[in-house]
Amino acid sequence: MIRSILFIPVLLALMSSPLVAQWEVKHVDKGGPTIYDLHILQDGSGFAVGTGGFILRTEDFGESWTPVPGNINEDLFQIALLGVDTIVVRGENMEYDGTLHRSEDGGLTWEMVYSNEDNELYSLQFFNDSVGLASGSDVIIRTTDGGKNWSTVYNIPAMTNFKVGVIWVDVASDSVAYAGVIAWQSGLENLTRYLLKSVDHGLTWQEIKVLGNDCVHCNLFFYNELIGFTDWVLLQRTQDGGMTWDTTNNVGYVVDVSMPSPEKVYTVNHPVAYISLPDILTEFAICSSTDGGLTWQGEMTYGAHLETIQFLNDSVGFVAGDHSLIMKTEHCGGPIVGDYPWDLYTSLTDETGKPIGMTLYPNPARSVIHLRVDAPQPYWPEIEVHLFRPDGVVLFSTPFILANQTLDIPVSSFPSGIYFLRLTDPTGQVLSVKKVVIE
Image (cartoon, rainbow, N blue to C red; front, side, top):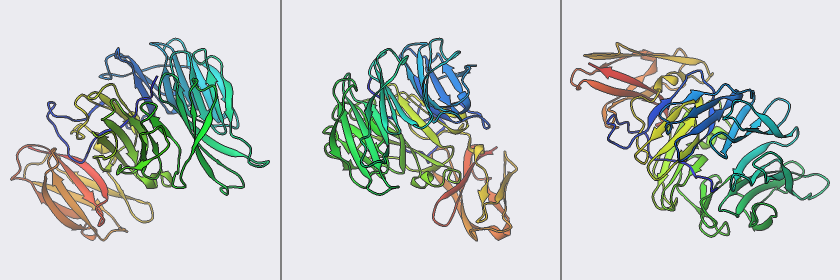
């Protein structure tokens, strides 16, 4: 089973017409867990999994989602569907760094089929309903019975008496798989990165390529035996099975990839700085490519982090992430529409990390909107205020001195409808976005 590569297009423009390509919210819970992975079968059934054993199920191609009251209470990071009700998940709990669990009743009951208190797991992939691979700290493990039993097929060779490393695997065809390895000794000294290939369903592995020093991670996303990607500092593409790699113009740090065809590729991204500042930055991107991933459209925008993406075909796709957010497109992606939960992020922070309050009133408004920003110790003396339509056209822009605390925005000349107010810092970084209704 070839792993679908994930991602999708631009997102500062916001459109309200259901006839236009766009993303629509299908599930969200402001206090809900983060969804790390979802998978939907061609018959319309599927699952989403996340923190604390969180599981959602759909039977209608993601139009509606129902919680599954399973007996699993650990963070779930990846899911493999081996049938309508047979599921294998990759997780982690307080006792074990890496776990695999299996269910035969659609997630209601689970059996732990693999655990290791020392080795985390980073990837889970299946060739078919029987043969699969998982990898993580030091090892690649393999199953031939649908995930019931696992055995080690590769262990990072010792460079000295001390060894440690991480491995990501991805299935590229019915029998071929690749593995990206980062291994080191003595802290981060003597760091080595290399690419492994298997042509016998992951049973044996051969080193085929030493990877460059700019490879931060070796997470792999292969469409077939030749075409694939890895999320280095900048997204890299190969067209010859990993022997050579081209740098693309994809933005940010790629979290997941979906490739429904050789030409169309979609990704979800975090800011590069998110790797070191995960609790501060609230940005994401959905990017798209129509030339096989060489050039990309899309940019960072303010909102909930996305963690996963899946396209069923060239048109229908899904993204999911923080706050149990699941969005769907039926027209090759498009802008984020008016039902996006901008209210999840409505406050700024000053240089000490203290919250800066932001209020809009009245909302709905007829003649004027009063913007209030409570910033007793502002980091930026002045910010920019932009009022724009759902199609991204900016109708009003003005600088705002935070010491003044309030700003009146005239709106009587604008037609009734939904608009958005965006605040940016002096560098253009989006600080907050909030929906506005004009009557």
